[in-house]
Image 1 (spheres, rainbow, N blue to C red):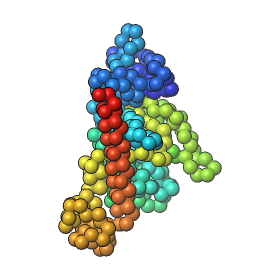
Image 2 (cartoon, rainbow, N blue to C red):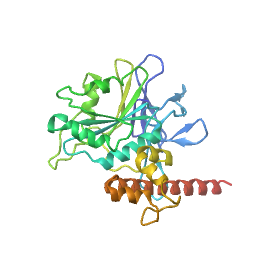
Image 3 (cartoon, rainbow, N blue to C red):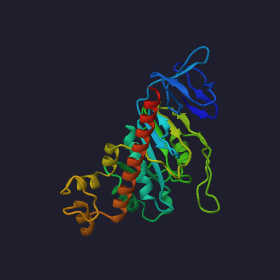
Image 4 (tube, helix red, strand yellow):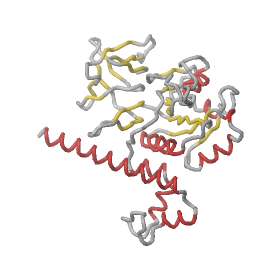
Length: 308
């Protein structure tokens, strides 16, 4: 599936041919191989019969966000992806908390995260700023790039291998569509500047898969300002491996890291080995993940009881 619009999807045939528009049911959901119904997303494989009945095939990976509401509802931003390009601007200064949040989502998806810092031509020390980001993007490649100067793009182009699908995520104004166009070698997506208040314009209003000449696929996404977290313990521990290691070293397994005896995290904070910002980010995301997990359990448990 190469594009999702309200009430319909655009599907590229497995064999040669032009994309086919397939209308969806009113609720926008399609049947899966397991008997339930889900909203399809860009990157999904769909089995479309001659009478346009649609079956959603199993996803190999999926980048998923939590949506607002009192009950758990997950939204797949992209499916069957191999690499998540987390795009953040260097001007204005990058938001480390947002990068940490998107890294957690990327690790949970089962895909490889890569951080791309755009607008390197607008700041005096892009490499130093990239080092600051790398300090929170553990075990992740971080690249500072300037699309107008064609600088720093080669490591990103090296990712564009046959049968590799990449999704581009980040805030409005970070230059996601400009990056996609540079990697595609053509004007594949509309681009725009900043609004009068300095915020990015939502030039991308839908998710779309862009085939590249070498056989790779790129998925551009609309700008994300607030991202509901869908994470498990493994994803959070991977994104915050430094904090997780400290938590493991606490004297007691149920340490609250708030005045408990033998707390390794408090010792690291006092010694300056762990920043308050990093700790607060980890604690906030851990609370969100736990809350989302409780909502998910409640929804599934109630649904199971109701079906008996």
